[in-house]
Each structure stands twice: as structure tokens, then as C-alpha cells.
Amino acid sequence: MTKALPKKTLSRVVILSVAVLSLIGCEAHKEEQEILAVIETGVQHLEARDIGQAMGLATGDFMAHPGKLGRGAVARRLMALNKTYGAISILHPAPDIDVDVSNDRAIVTMPFIAVRSGFNPHELDAVYDDPEAWITRAADVADVRQVEISMIKKDTQWRVQTTRFTSAF
Image (tube, rainbow, N blue to C red):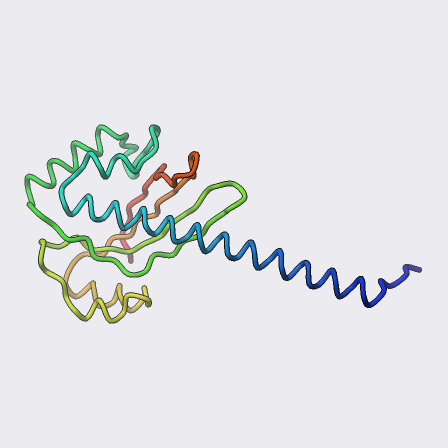
């Protein structure tokens, strides 16, 4: 028969457990904010047509799917898109970020639309925090795509390792 822990010991274990879980939660939130900043910086670089800076956020072994496109191929495609379509805006709701702090890895899933620069349907701003409503409203003005971004923390910086584009539907 096992002996129960004394109340004092049990309460210390519970308090310590709550403290540890709180610290893990704070660390994950900090990482999510850093990742979100990288995503927003990437969007800004793409909208500014600064492909070099956008690709600077990727790892050396970056790969885009479908097509298994490396850094050079992606940069060439982005240049061709810029030449064909001109300035664009990339609109998206709040991304879904799943961070594995212990392994310095993260997966970001985000629906988005790319539209001519300056076009911003205001009704999308109202549903930024509701991705399902955002997709429904965005589908009225453009083809909604989804990107899954795999990220890894190298040294102290989050970097994009792979992207996978699909239809949001």
C-alpha cells in the first residue's frame, strides 16, 4: 500500500507545477510574438517587392511546395509575379501558430489573398481574429489560398524552412 504525500508536500508540488506551466506558457507566447513579427516582416518585404529581404528570412535549405522549389527558383518566380502583376497587398487573418519550444520549431497556418496594392476590403479587418469568417468574406473578392509555414529557430532568430501552398477550401 502506498503512502499518501503529506498535505504540505502536496501543496508545494501543485504550486511548483503551476509555476512551471506558467513559465512554459509565457515562453510559448513570447515565441509566438517573435514568429508573428517574422511573418509580418515577410509580408511587408513581399508587398514592397523586396525579394532579397523576404528571402533573407528563410533558411539556407528553404524549400517551397508544391514543386520542391529552392531559394533561387522561388526568388525568380516572385520577380516574374512582380513584373506581371505589379504591386500587391497580401491580406490575411490572425495566423494559427503551433510552437514546439523544446525543439525550436513552429508551424504557422494562414489563409491569405493577394490583391492589387491599395485594395483592402474593410470588412476583412472586422474579422481578423476569426479565420473562418475571414475566409468566407475574402472568398467574395479573391481566390483564398492557404500557406503552411514550417519555421525553425537558428541561434536566436526564427527562420522559414518550408512553405506549402494549397487552396483554403
